[in-house]
Length: 380
Image (tube, rainbow, N blue to C red; front, side):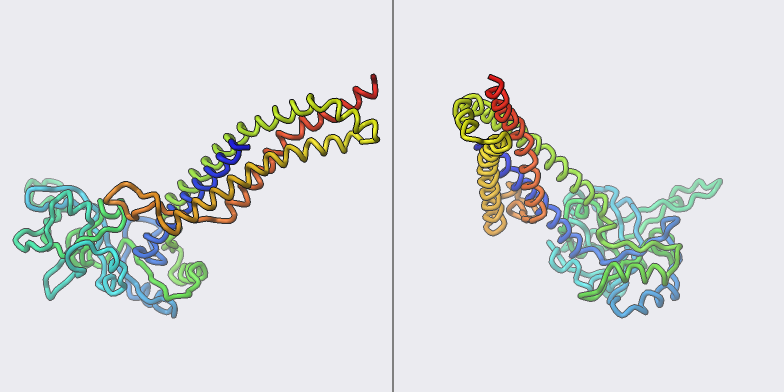
């Protein structure tokens, strides 16, 4: 009973932690990323025309359309350099407030008069030792230009642009270590893609039906584009989490199944020990099904007591962690101080269902063996 209780408690806690991690990631991506993203079906970029813009703006629930032009570029600052993802965005990105809660240092601005500014991830800032308060050093961005046959001048084989750092954001490691925001017109000159965009980010009003609008916008702009929701953009990550959660559930179910072998042997020994009692019950008119049900019920009591004890303890630990965050991450740079936990009742249902099945499988054979003693007594 104790082993079943411990296995059940561990299963509930681990599943709750997986739910908490997924909920945390959805919250982070949902606060920074847009509700919908429009991308070309073929190629990396497309010609952004007024017709496309008007077709999307025609929907009342669309509040912002952010132009995006991004690509990888070599970034230099002082004597350090590295490759990062340079993301050119229109200025309404700042108005949306998606980075307001993630500013770690400096200011949130892309332009000030004719001066262009960059907002860099904390990982990029750390690698290059960028100081937004130092106006003496600019960030140099280098992107390979179109190389023509016979070209020998190295200076014409790449495009170089300078930009001042304005602020530093801290969202999540994959963003912080690779992303730099710049004005979209600056990106056009750097990548030599005037009038082109790699994607459009659409922000919707509160209460908007995302799935329905996705289909309507897709119809409005045509098949040469694909419209993706936030979940679809990060679908690969969420699938990995769901697969990990499934295999963890499977592994702990096997552990509980192995622990339930104790119930099998306990009931088998009980059936041997109670042969005389079974004989007395038989003499009093007890049927084979009655004897079988008695031992089956005994096994269910033992298993369910351990299972529901473990379930109660698991829920208690998960609730305490969810409310008070007693167990910390142990890292100063962690997004949250404590492990995120979220209890989902569907997980509890499947946990109970799994335990019921395992219990019946382990308890039914000893119960059948005990009922067979009646037939042996009758033959004697």
